[in-house]
Image 1: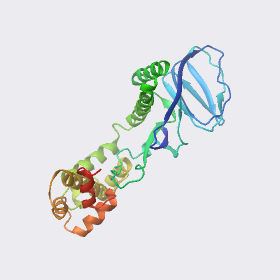
Image 2: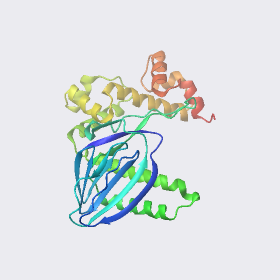
Image 3: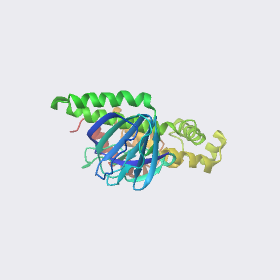
Image 4: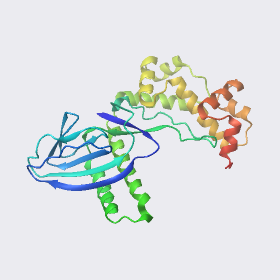
Amino acid sequence: MDCLQLLIPPLPQFLTAGHSVWSPGMRHFPRTFDVYDLLIVCSGTLYMSEEGKEYEIPGGSMLLLEPGCAHRGYRSCEEPTEIYWVHFAHTPPVQRLAEKSVAWSAMVRQGTDSDQRPVEQYLYLPKYGSADLKPLLPLLEELLRMRRSLTMEHAIDLHVQLGKLLSQLQAGLRGSRQGSRSLAVADQVKRYLEARLAEPYRAECMAETLHFDVDYAARCLRKHTGLSPLQYHHVIRVEEAKRLLRYTGLPVRDVAAQVGYADYNYFIRLFRKTAGASPGAYRHSATGYV
């Protein structure tokens, strides 16, 4: 399934939403506007085109129309068609890509007190395809309920509710990867590296233990994390170093040794590159500095 990659933060902003049942003969009017239009069809079939590409959306399916793209109904409904629609504002997608290309487990750098802007992250939403209505419908109904009786006291809650809906759509997108062979191999590689965090990384030892070709195992891990085995090994070492810096009084040199770095200067350079701050500065900010 193709998905849209949206840069966050900021999070998408709720604009409006609705629910209706279209009678046979109805079709969507031509329109171009600068917001996202999420269409979720419960029953019947909706026929929409975007920039000339036609989408047939039967019950249990969805389509996410993009800002700035002309869309219209290219064919009338032939039976009663129940639809939920949600409009939200956000910047245009960074790119469109296949779900299998998303590095779901890629690590996001932890922010520090010296950061001037949030760490770049992404939201992935399905473009078109099947939708699991069971978890989506309660979220949509609550969104509509809040919209009908919104007060300033709960305005933020409406945007949070949109976030829950989009998060569920992303979760459904991720669900398509479950049971894949490459994911199973990637998980085995991660467990192997995590169990040997303080030991030097040796590709041949990993291959011998897991009974996988080194290149194949590395491709599987990169597919699901965006990292090579060596890069992942460094990341989990640095994460353990962060934990020790936050919750123990160990000297930085001892922290480096405990996570497997005999070369203290190399550890300092790697930690700064990965965490965005030196170990000393990280400990200072993580233990109460405001």
